Amino acid sequence: MKPISKRMEPIPASGIRKFFDLILSTPDVISLGVGEPDFVTPPHISDAGIKAIEEGYTSYTSNWGLIELRELISEALKHEYGVDYDPHGEILVTSGVSEALDILMRVLLDPGDEVIVIEPTYVSYKPCIRFAYGEPVVVPTESSNEFKPTVEDIEVKITDKTKALVLGYPNNPTGAIMAKKELEAIANLVNEYDLYVISDEIYSKLTYNGKHTCFSSLNGMQERTILLNGFSKSHAMTGWRIGYACGNREIIEAMMKVHQYTMLCAPVQSQLAACEALRNGEESCKKMVDEYNRRRRLMVAGLEEAGLECFNPRGAFYTFPSIKKSGLSSTVFAQRLFDEKKVAVVPGNIFGECGEGFVRCAYAVSPEDIVEAMNRIKEFMEELGV
Image (cartoon, rainbow, N blue to C red; front, side):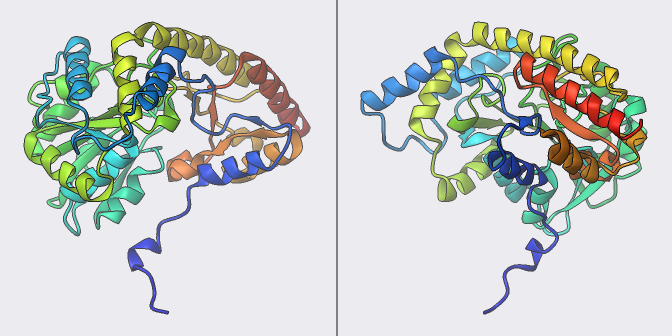
């Protein structure tokens, strides 16, 4: 048999999915591992999807997505962040943000183009860059700076091959956010070096200290930024697979072409459910965010009680505590915690080398499970003699 493509050789299987598979096959596990809301989709949103099926909405839509949905996305972005995207040509509805990220890399990159990625980082960024024959260039961050890069950190990594910068804030896995002033400094750098910005803002509604800053709202950035967002985290719609990309017409139209030949369109029922989420979902979204905020405080306090240093996350639904005092690597810590205490966390090194010495804990679980998991982690640390 002839070999498969060589570009697949350096691509690891997702470490997150490995732990997810372990969870499914092991009873009585408290999972802090998978980044998914434990809430079900609000009933009025689900009802809209069910109604769509019952009324016969079971066919393809426009490759761009329903114009009704694109208009609602446009209105929401203008209202919340002051950015104005034309629903006719500057917004593409996709099957989740994951598809949007994949097709964006394919239309943006030529072989050898470099893309700067801030680590610790979401696990899909670097593989998608490599799938498109690009080269990820890593900017590591530290907990002492709240896992945020400085302009100097980024600038030193820019070469004549650099084409784009990926920003994912609020951040998965650290829960870090970036203030408007910090993003403005990066925007100046982007202009200076003529770069694109891929701004993954899927957690934009999950912020706990002030209002989220949409990167494309900054001066001169709308033309350079491809904004990725969706409904999975904000409206507990992970399984509906509905996201979108916004940007200048040339890029969005090119993305539509790849989408057209591969995915065709996002499911129509999901699109109509997303319309309902935008029309009437703000109250249910706020309730979920308020509950995440309560759980965030509960988990941070529990981790500190267990003797683990933990940066206080400002967004998303993750904590990223240091486990360095345990003397174990991130992988060994996570495996032993799972085996000995039936608590699942994700090793930090999965998110990049600078994530070694940390683990990711998601607080998208019930308060009762958080309290029990923190007690088990405390016992684990005590048994290690720490």
